[in-house]
Length: 223
Image 1: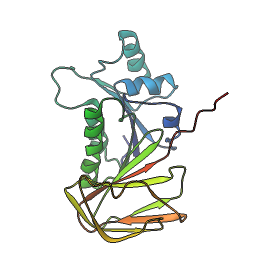
Image 2: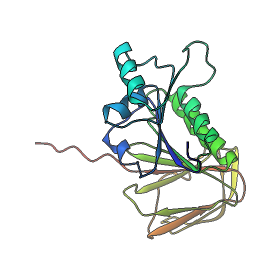
Image 3: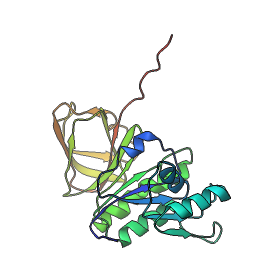
């Protein structure tokens, strides 16, 4: 496996055509459980398919096995990690330079929140990580790691502490700028800011800050 690659993890949460638009040439693909089935059904060949595969049928499992470069199955009872964390650890072990996760948010909020916490693992390892779904893009920043954002269809930018407190929050290019502000976990002050310049910057002095870019679903047409 080539080092310093960008790894994209497809897990068994909510996936759709939007997820394929995340891919770039040269990406290494990891399919976790039903995420591997999604990739193979799109005609893509995962570099590895792994997990307990408790959400696929025997026929689907065989399809995944034959359609993946590498296949790693584990017992669904005798394992300590979620399928997504197994995939995340594997990407780190391969020397990933960046990790993007799709299909890691869904109806199971225990899994969704645990997957958000993986962003901290990436940050501590010095590997830029993000979570994307059809309407949201999540990244985590720490002190002295400014995040530059470009204007995009994700019109809302929200800031949520992932530590008890975050201090020294400064925003440039936003409708509601901040300078050396503080947020405490449980506050909604950082929700739904708007990027008004072509480029904006988010930086902090202390703590861990979750930056969530969001867009609303298109309104349904009535006839």
